[in-house]
Length: 152
Image 1: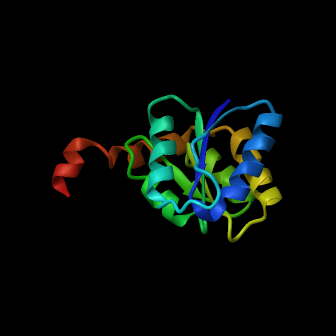
Image 2: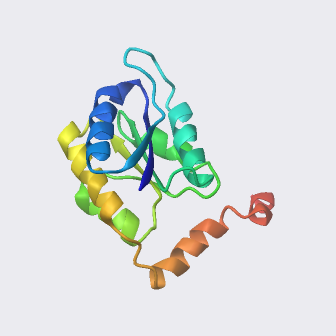
């Protein structure tokens, strides 16, 4: 699987640990993050990963910041992205099974690097259930439709 990964400055060490683990598991990883010690505003890495996924350059995306919240909000501004902040393996699985999330967001100040790796692996290994959930995801995506934006 092709995975785009990035982080702000609060999660560089965790990102590097995750990238190594994903590569060892056989994934093609595009690390879009910067070096340690350089301050990065979280909308920048979020946009890089979200555009990579939305444009088909990556199958899924992983974003890290202090809490996972900022990168999630920013990523969800990109058309076609369904980003979810998750906190454990269960929420990662549900984000895929029920919401067909294509970007997972995690907080490096809340989770250890090993936990982040396990959570991301669950996210990547989980398929979308479809069925009644597909109707709901379609309704979410319809909120992005241009005619709806004019009504806002």
